[in-house]
Image (cartoon, rainbow, N blue to C red; front, side, top):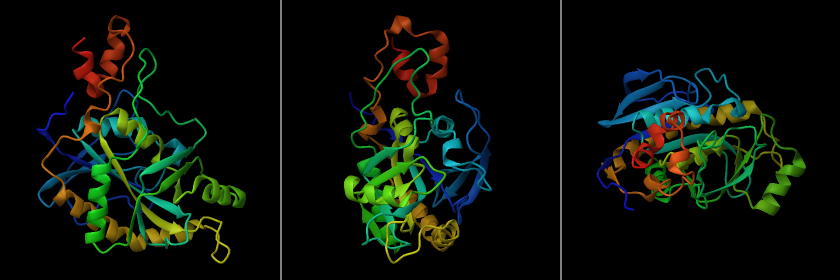
Length: 296
């Protein structure tokens, strides 16, 4: 099955710690949405960036009200899908796990190691329908490459590729955990929010990439102070302008239409027999999978 090459590209940005709004963008509207999976973290701001529509959602809510485990990622991704978003850029503060990366650098990872505890709903399937999507490469390669170019053009020091360890939190790592991730997982960065966002974006057939803003050395570094939230926020404040500039550069550089394979990731995912899928399930998943369910 080929993706629709005429699908218009619409960019959504999920802002993390320290990035609660887009600077330099002209707000056009605010969208307060409900989804079959509850309410998203906050209103979604529709903005004009370089003549292009960009949708912005603060992951933790304005004022940073939500812990990573409290974020309703299903509602966030579904709400962006309702608005026609095809490409999602996630911005997150992360701890550094390798010595060649310095606070203030940017990392665009290409792999995730899951250390969450299973309490975060991580699929749109279930409750009457079974489905499985491929997740070997959790980030969209095309969008990730575009993010690397945009950040580099804005003057950032960018590290392309690497493994993001997603921990449960809200506590930071113990020292032995930090050393384990470095030595056994060969982690590049560590954070608390890439999952289940990346899984849900794949199920929702959206391109997903992350701009990880390196803030601290977790607690493994022998000569650097263990992570402190004040240090994290200060580095984030210093780099918020660079992150905003990257978003604007990315918005200007993305093509007008897309034919990425991410946009038909669920084409063969549903394994439940059509006659066993109830009307309630079909209604709940129509925004995501209507084109598959309606052809049954």
